[in-house]
Image 1 (cartoon, rainbow, N blue to C red):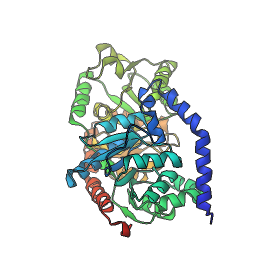
Image 2 (cartoon, rainbow, N blue to C red; image 1 turned 45 degrees about the vertical axis):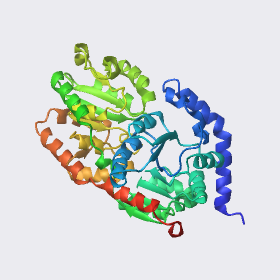
Image 3 (cartoon, rainbow, N blue to C red; image 1 turned 90 degrees about the horizontal axis):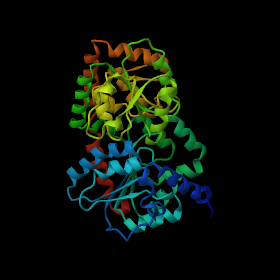
Image 4 (cartoon, one colour; image 1 turned 180 degrees about the vertical axis):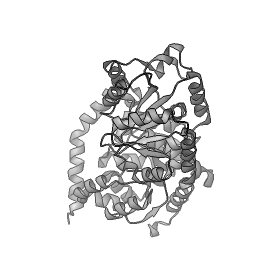
Length: 432
């Protein structure tokens, strides 16, 4: 009997196969600026060099944010099972680069295969993981179906699902409900996430918190940011992880401020937008200096101290930028994009101003507001004005202390999730 789910998977696979040339063309195009995309391309089809040793615990961290969130989970897993060997997979160059720092002897790293039946079957045959862990929102129908048939238990860890994503999932219920139901355990960030995932077909759901509260900012980066701030002798407003459509109005609002202005530090969310944002600065009548101009371990040149804007065109240095700033504007929250990770700002003790759109981190945003670690602004123009006020406010130190306390209060998810993942991995097949 042909079920609606089987028909939906067949249609989904056909669409992806037809789109395969466009997918690889896009990877090759992105590889012009990020060469990592052009390397190991056979892994995108489930291939590679030789079969891998079986039995590794597989963790998929698609991009930079997920790879960084995976770090405390990996640490907790190793603490509970020191001999554990890992397979890390990624979808972006920044994620793969960040994941490389988590590897130890006996571990492996690969691209997640394209979600077609053949690619995921080859991937599972090549690596033969004991258990798979997908982070946050990575629900791939073909992959989950193949893992179920191959007897590989799957966990969705640090799981979140916004109301918008739930609505999209319900419109594609014939495809998504069987995929979600194939997950052996869902470890949700919040009760609201858990409820939405259950409504979409999740069978076993626990609420264990958010891994990102367990992320520890590297002390060296915090010290470097603090040293730069002391040498600068000028207030700094950070626009953190800005997304498409936010940079131009931000720069226009900044240019409209009366002088003397604080330094504006803009850090785009995606590396491919560094040059685009750099080109917008002179269009707004402002001057800029790029982080990349003074090298990986260098310090700003004297000439950089008097410009209007610094462009944070580097990867993995957000703690440095938060330590440098007096106050931060949360990227992705001023356009209807759902906001970026606000927990990192709190862990660095940086006061945070959010826009109206924080549905990707809804509970964390509300908790931060309640704890006095963040404020919400109606729009970007209001946030820019408020940021200038906060940067000059002597009470900013108390705000920083509230942010640090908020971040510390919610730690502990990594150990809980590691125990839950290992419980699934050790569960007898008859009980899955």
